[in-house]
Length: 276
Image (cartoon, rainbow, N blue to C red; front, side, top):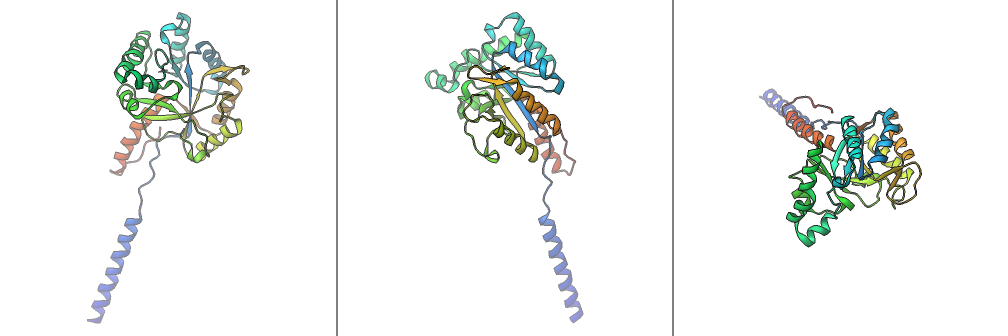
C-alpha cells in the first residue's frame, strides 16, 4: 500500500515537472530579414540623385526616390528616374504640389487632398511608367486620419521621426507596420551628426533592425539647408558592406510585412521561418 502511494506521488511529481517545462518553452523569435538601411530622398533633385547613384553603384546600394511635382519635370529627368527604377531603386510619391498634408486637410478636408494632391500624382506617375506603392509626407505633416486614408492607396506610408533620442528609443526603425518614420541625415538638420548616425547604425546592426533614413539634395559640399554630402552616403554604404548588412527600399518593407505574417502563421504549424 505504501509503495503504491509513493509510486503515485513520484508519477504525479514527474507529470507536473514535464508540464512546467512545456509551459516554459517559448516560440522562437520570428526572424524574417537581415539588419539594414532604407535610404530615401525627398522632393525633385533628380539630376543630383542620378549623379550620386553613378558614384555609389560600386557598393550595390539601392534607394527610394520620393518625387514631388512630377508635372514640372523635364523629359530628361523622367528618363533618369526610369533608369534609376530599372536598376532596382524605388520611385515613390511625395505629392503633386508638395502640400503640407495635415495643414491642407485641416482647411479643405481629406477628399480635396486626395483629389488635388494624390490622385493626379498617381495618374501621371503611372502614365510615365513608375510603379508607385509608397508615399512620403511632405514636411512630415501627418495625422491618424491621413494615415488611414493613404494606407488604402499605398502599401507603405513614411513620416518623419523629428526628436533625437537614444538609439533604442528612436522611432526610425521598421516595426512591421505600414506607417514608418525616418531620421533626417541632411547636414544642417538640428539632430544630425556623424557620431549619432553611427550610433543608429550600430544599434541596427546589433539588434537586427532596419534603420530608415531620409535626405533631400545630394551634394559634394553643403551650401544650404536640405542637403546631404555624398561623403555621408558613402560612409553609410561602407558601413553596410563591412557589417554584412543590406539595403532596402520602402516597398521592400511591404514585402517584409507579408513575410512576417506568413511566417507567424507558419510558426504556429511548426514550419521553419523564411529569411528575406
